[in-house]
Image (cartoon, rainbow, N blue to C red; front, side):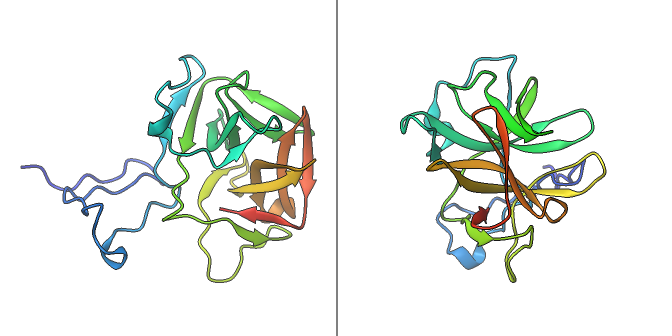
Length: 186
Protein backbone atom coordinates (compact mmCIF):
# COMPACT_ATOMS: atom_id res chain seq x y z
CA UNK A 1 0.00 0.00 0.00
CA UNK A 2 1.45 3.34 -0.98
CA UNK A 3 1.11 6.63 0.88
CA UNK A 4 0.55 10.12 -0.41
CA UNK A 5 2.52 11.34 -3.41
CA UNK A 6 3.97 14.78 -2.80
CA UNK A 7 4.56 17.25 -5.62
CA UNK A 8 8.11 17.42 -6.93
CA UNK A 9 7.79 21.04 -8.07
CA UNK A 10 5.58 24.05 -7.37
CA UNK A 11 2.31 23.89 -9.26
CA UNK A 12 2.11 20.10 -9.36
CA UNK A 13 -0.98 18.45 -7.96
CA UNK A 14 -0.96 16.66 -4.60
CA UNK A 15 -2.25 13.11 -4.85
CA UNK A 16 -3.64 11.68 -1.63
CA UNK A 17 -4.14 8.16 -2.91
CA UNK A 18 -7.85 8.49 -2.11
CA UNK A 19 -9.47 10.14 -5.14
CA UNK A 20 -12.72 12.03 -4.70
CA UNK A 21 -15.47 10.32 -6.70
CA UNK A 22 -16.38 12.39 -9.78
CA UNK A 23 -20.06 12.41 -8.78
CA UNK A 24 -19.40 13.68 -5.22
CA UNK A 25 -21.26 16.86 -4.23
CA UNK A 26 -19.31 19.99 -5.17
CA UNK A 27 -18.50 20.95 -1.55
CA UNK A 28 -16.69 17.62 -1.06
CA UNK A 29 -14.58 17.72 -4.19
CA UNK A 30 -10.96 18.75 -3.93
CA UNK A 31 -10.19 22.09 -5.58
CA UNK A 32 -8.09 21.79 -8.73
CA UNK A 33 -4.39 22.67 -8.47
CA UNK A 34 -3.53 26.36 -9.12
CA UNK A 35 -2.49 25.61 -12.70
CA UNK A 36 -5.36 23.18 -13.43
CA UNK A 37 -5.17 19.62 -14.72
CA UNK A 38 -3.03 19.57 -17.86
CA UNK A 39 -2.20 17.24 -20.73
CA UNK A 40 1.53 17.29 -21.64
CA UNK A 41 2.13 17.50 -25.40
CA UNK A 42 5.03 18.21 -27.74
CA UNK A 43 5.46 19.61 -31.22
CA UNK A 44 7.80 16.63 -31.80
CA UNK A 45 4.73 14.35 -31.91
CA UNK A 46 1.49 14.49 -33.91
CA UNK A 47 -1.44 16.39 -32.41
CA UNK A 48 -3.74 14.02 -30.47
CA UNK A 49 -6.37 12.44 -32.72
CA UNK A 50 -8.78 11.74 -29.84
CA UNK A 51 -10.11 15.27 -29.39
CA UNK A 52 -12.63 14.08 -26.77
CA UNK A 53 -9.69 13.54 -24.41
CA UNK A 54 -8.91 17.26 -24.77
CA UNK A 55 -12.45 18.36 -23.99
CA UNK A 56 -14.61 20.82 -25.87
CA UNK A 57 -12.44 23.58 -27.36
CA UNK A 58 -13.28 26.86 -25.63
CA UNK A 59 -12.69 28.87 -28.83
CA UNK A 60 -12.72 28.71 -32.62
CA UNK A 61 -10.26 30.42 -34.94
CA UNK A 62 -11.17 33.14 -37.46
CA UNK A 63 -12.62 30.55 -39.87
CA UNK A 64 -15.27 29.73 -37.23
CA UNK A 65 -14.46 26.01 -37.47
CA UNK A 66 -10.89 25.29 -36.34
CA UNK A 67 -10.70 24.47 -32.61
CA UNK A 68 -8.51 26.61 -30.35
CA UNK A 69 -7.47 25.40 -26.90
CA UNK A 70 -5.57 27.08 -24.07
CA UNK A 71 -2.30 25.95 -22.61
CA UNK A 72 1.22 26.86 -21.57
CA UNK A 73 4.42 26.72 -23.63
CA UNK A 74 7.43 25.58 -21.61
CA UNK A 75 10.42 27.73 -22.51
CA UNK A 76 13.99 27.53 -21.21
CA UNK A 77 13.53 30.32 -18.60
CA UNK A 78 9.79 30.98 -18.61
CA UNK A 79 6.39 29.40 -19.11
CA UNK A 80 4.09 31.34 -21.46
CA UNK A 81 0.30 30.98 -21.66
CA UNK A 82 -0.48 30.06 -25.26
CA UNK A 83 -3.16 29.19 -27.77
CA UNK A 84 -3.14 25.67 -29.18
CA UNK A 85 -4.71 24.29 -32.33
CA UNK A 86 -4.25 21.20 -34.52
CA UNK A 87 -4.38 23.52 -37.56
CA UNK A 88 -1.62 25.83 -36.28
CA UNK A 89 1.99 25.30 -37.35
CA UNK A 90 3.51 24.80 -34.89
CA UNK A 91 0.57 23.67 -32.72
CA UNK A 92 1.23 26.26 -29.96
CA UNK A 93 1.87 30.00 -30.24
CA UNK A 94 1.97 32.96 -27.88
CA UNK A 95 2.42 36.73 -27.94
CA UNK A 96 5.99 37.86 -27.38
CA UNK A 97 8.14 40.82 -28.38
CA UNK A 98 5.45 42.43 -30.54
CA UNK A 99 4.73 39.34 -32.61
CA UNK A 100 3.14 35.92 -32.63
CA UNK A 101 5.80 33.39 -31.66
CA UNK A 102 5.40 29.76 -32.67
CA UNK A 103 6.60 27.35 -30.00
CA UNK A 104 8.71 24.25 -30.61
CA UNK A 105 8.93 21.56 -27.93
CA UNK A 106 6.88 20.80 -24.82
CA UNK A 107 3.56 22.52 -24.16
CA UNK A 108 0.72 21.62 -21.81
CA UNK A 109 -2.91 21.76 -22.89
CA UNK A 110 -5.38 22.87 -20.21
CA UNK A 111 -8.78 21.29 -20.90
CA UNK A 112 -11.49 23.86 -20.23
CA UNK A 113 -13.84 22.47 -17.58
CA UNK A 114 -16.87 24.79 -17.35
CA UNK A 115 -18.04 23.16 -14.09
CA UNK A 116 -14.72 24.14 -12.44
CA UNK A 117 -13.64 27.23 -14.40
CA UNK A 118 -15.12 30.45 -15.70
CA UNK A 119 -13.98 33.47 -17.66
CA UNK A 120 -14.22 36.67 -15.58
CA UNK A 121 -14.09 40.23 -16.95
CA UNK A 122 -10.88 42.04 -15.95
CA UNK A 123 -8.91 45.17 -16.75
CA UNK A 124 -5.39 46.59 -16.31
CA UNK A 125 -3.92 43.30 -15.04
CA UNK A 126 -5.96 43.39 -11.82
CA UNK A 127 -7.40 40.11 -10.55
CA UNK A 128 -11.09 40.67 -9.71
CA UNK A 129 -11.76 40.58 -5.97
CA UNK A 130 -12.64 37.17 -4.59
CA UNK A 131 -11.40 35.32 -7.69
CA UNK A 132 -8.59 32.79 -8.06
CA UNK A 133 -7.24 32.83 -11.62
CA UNK A 134 -5.70 29.73 -13.17
CA UNK A 135 -1.92 30.08 -13.21
CA UNK A 136 -0.70 30.14 -16.79
CA UNK A 137 3.02 30.60 -16.29
CA UNK A 138 5.71 33.12 -15.43
CA UNK A 139 8.16 35.50 -17.09
CA UNK A 140 11.96 35.08 -16.93
CA UNK A 141 11.98 37.57 -14.02
CA UNK A 142 9.40 35.50 -12.10
CA UNK A 143 6.37 37.75 -12.76
CA UNK A 144 3.20 35.64 -12.76
CA UNK A 145 1.14 35.13 -15.91
CA UNK A 146 -2.50 34.05 -16.15
CA UNK A 147 -4.66 32.76 -18.98
CA UNK A 148 -6.65 35.52 -20.67
CA UNK A 149 -8.85 35.97 -23.72
CA UNK A 150 -9.58 39.15 -25.67
CA UNK A 151 -11.48 40.00 -28.84
CA UNK A 152 -9.46 40.84 -31.96
CA UNK A 153 -11.35 41.51 -35.21
CA UNK A 154 -14.39 39.66 -33.85
CA UNK A 155 -12.42 36.58 -32.77
CA UNK A 156 -11.92 35.57 -29.11
CA UNK A 157 -8.15 35.00 -28.89
CA UNK A 158 -6.44 33.27 -25.93
CA UNK A 159 -3.32 34.88 -24.50
CA UNK A 160 -1.65 35.96 -21.29
CA UNK A 161 -2.31 38.55 -18.59
CA UNK A 162 -0.38 39.96 -15.68
CA UNK A 163 -0.19 43.02 -13.48
CA UNK A 164 3.15 43.97 -15.08
CA UNK A 165 1.45 43.93 -18.52
CA UNK A 166 -1.30 46.38 -17.41
CA UNK A 167 -3.76 44.01 -19.06
CA UNK A 168 -3.39 41.15 -21.47
CA UNK A 169 -1.51 40.28 -24.64
CA UNK A 170 -2.82 38.02 -27.39
CA UNK A 171 -1.26 36.83 -30.64
CA UNK A 172 -3.34 37.06 -33.80
CA UNK A 173 -2.44 37.35 -37.46
CA UNK A 174 1.29 37.31 -36.72
CA UNK A 175 1.10 40.30 -34.34
CA UNK A 176 0.95 40.85 -30.59
CA UNK A 177 -2.12 42.81 -29.49
CA UNK A 178 -2.15 44.66 -26.15
CA UNK A 179 -5.57 44.89 -24.48
CA UNK A 180 -5.99 46.82 -21.22
CA UNK A 181 -9.78 46.63 -20.86
CA UNK A 182 -12.62 44.33 -21.90
CA UNK A 183 -10.70 41.08 -21.67
CA UNK A 184 -11.34 38.06 -19.46
CA UNK A 185 -9.23 35.98 -17.08
CA UNK A 186 -9.67 32.26 -16.53
